[in-house]
Amino acid sequence: ITDRYSWEEWAATPLVFLTAWHMLVTRAQLQKGETVLIHAAGSGVGSAAIQIAKSLGARVITTVGSNEKEAKAKKLGADHVINYRTADFTKEVHALTGSLGVDVVLEHIGTETFTKSLASLSKKGRLVTCGTTSGGKVELDLRFLFVRQYSIMGCYMGGRSELDQAIGWLKEGRLKPVVDSVFPLKEARQAQEQMLERKNFGKIVLVP
Image (cartoon, rainbow, N blue to C red; front, side, top):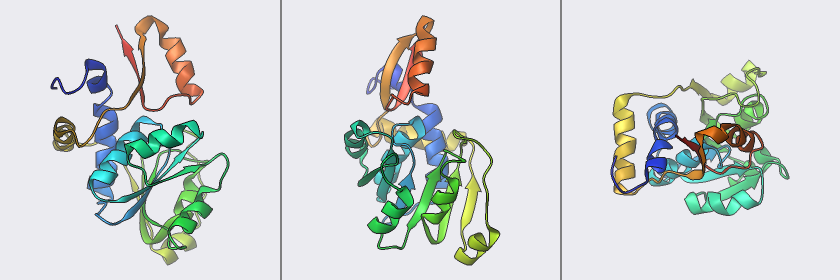
């Protein structure tokens, strides 16, 4: 680590930037000029993925759960922000892409969003998934899958070389850790409650 960021910011870095890098760069192979839908801009992986996607030259559409998070998502580089509580994100995606859909979806919500995430893809689109925040059971119509020629890829963490590349971009300032708040370890319960209530934008850090 370097003195570019604080200890708390560096602590918030490895898991989310490695995961997002593995999903977008290694697995989905997101290209300049493509459009990507990234769920939950306020999450650790979401906030990291937005930055990586923009650095790659992609057009970024993201979702948030409150109007307050919209400005923060745009500051990270999102081109379009959809409040999933007040709008159908699939319909919004098709409106923003001229009914074509996105090239890539970064999915880490699970049951609540998976089917609609697939419906947001363009023909031959790629979906990468790493999480099941809302549950792990989904229904999949195989006819929809093969007629549209989708690719669905599971992602889990990544390798050391990927982490080194992401850290390199952080050291250059192309990416920035996103810390919502810092709690002393004795207040871990309050930190957990804040996350469960989805009040955070970025990582919550515990310090000894």
